[in-house]
Amino acid sequence: MHPSTEDLLSVRDGEPVDASVRAVIAEDAAKARDVERLRETRHALRGLPELAPPAGAWERIVAVERATRERSNTWLRRTAGVGVAAAVAALAIVVIGTPSQHRGLEPARGSQANGASPTPAAEAPSSIVGTTTLFDPDRPFIGARIVPASYAQLVQESARLDRELRRFSRQRPMMSGETATTIAGLEDRIALIDEQLTYSNARGVPQPQRNALWGERVELMNALVHVRYAQAQPAGY
Amino acid sequence: MRNTIKILGVTTLLLGFASASAVAQSTNSKQQQKDSAAAPKDEASLESELEKARAELQQAAREVARLSGELAQPFVRDFSRQFRYGGPRAMLGFVTEDVERGVRVASVTPNGPAAEAGLKIGDTITEIDGAHLTDTRTTGGKQSPTELLLGQMANVDPGESVKLRVVNEAGAERDVTVKARPMAANVWVNPPTPPGAPGPNSFSFRGPGNFWFFGPNPWAQMQLVALTPGLGTYFGTNKGLLVVRAPEDATLQLKDGDVILDIGGREPTSPEHAMRILGSFQKGEPLKITIMRNKSKQTLDVKLPADAPG
Image (cartoon, rainbow over all chains, first blue to last red; front, side, top):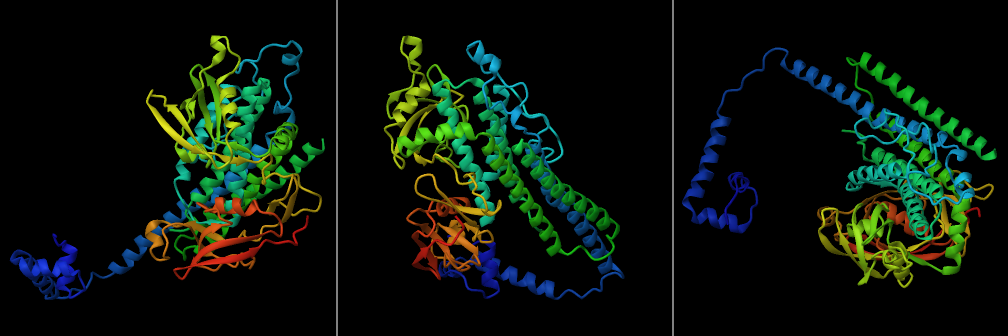
């Protein structure tokens, strides 16, 4: 048993400490001297004369604190309030930027007609989405990026969003029933898409349909990352 | 055409919300800088703005899920039909890519069984319960690694565990045990919305077959947080979900400070898990919720709302 400084201070101030701490101090002369030195230090500090602060010192401290607080407020508003609002815009762009005819839900007519064997990169829909804004950790809600159109790019984008999601998923914040319902719903939908993708893989579903499912997955993951990001923002400081 | 009009309508609305929020925030920010010498802005109003923006974000996210689901309906219908005749299926929660020695994990379902077991993108599964997943097509056979995996999974019931032999991208091998979950043929975020059903904040209960029951989400304002062992000492348990704010709706009989231990025999590990469990019950169905209240274990006999519009 080795009493810590905190233990010694507690003994000095007459606060309750573990019986074993008291026993060690009672038996160890060096520890008893430590406690005595702490008492003397306290006594010496209390004996110092009181000094009046310089004129205007308190006002200057208040001014500095207020300026810091204002900067913090502005930062918070930008990163949380504006950020979340911009996230709404980003998701809205996701919605507006996904006309059904660009999704490639139906197999490309050409590939069906000529019976060509699909290859992932070659049979990607020419355009899934033109203007979707995806989550970017460096510029969370500013950068507009083009959704990748090829199979490889979609899988890569999905993996990137997965990494982003895991950053937030480690946190276990307090959550409203409404947010929890939204997150659970998005996760369930992604689970269904994932099962469909695996079955599609086994049953030789044409590549355009599989790409459409991957595009769907990227969109849902993007929505999930945005919601998780907003949830992780502090409401105050 | 109807879909396009619907999408445009929704997005216009969402963009309106988003723009209004962003402009309001920006205007407020400038005004705040001008008034920096004055009293700091009320924290309560800042939090209120943030909550409003979060609510709009969630609405947008739900719309993304709903619209993307509508667009994928033909595909989902085919998929659902296959499930309907096959009964409940077990899922592991990842997407496969065939490679010569097995299946490579191309993505992992968020919060799915594989994610919980520590499976990662880039891992290659070479065996399931001792059965090899080597591509037989290279040796004159007919089955791909994914087909072999699905063949094995056909013998697995939801709730059972499977043992996977996994090789990571660096070549290191390990065994991973994954507990399979039931795979629904539909998902409750995106059931077909009947005419007159409440809007995007609605909560749905799973019914028998493919039926769904809708109602307003009575637990939208409830606040939950997963208990940590340190926090748990104050509540007499080291696991469960702490009810920080009980719902105004009295159905669940919860109070502030309760800790939810299980819902209908299932232990919720997160707020979203709790809502998922509640959503799996049927309208009007009775269930038991085990809680800790004042460090004492209690069982609440609950009957889920039966008067939701159907």
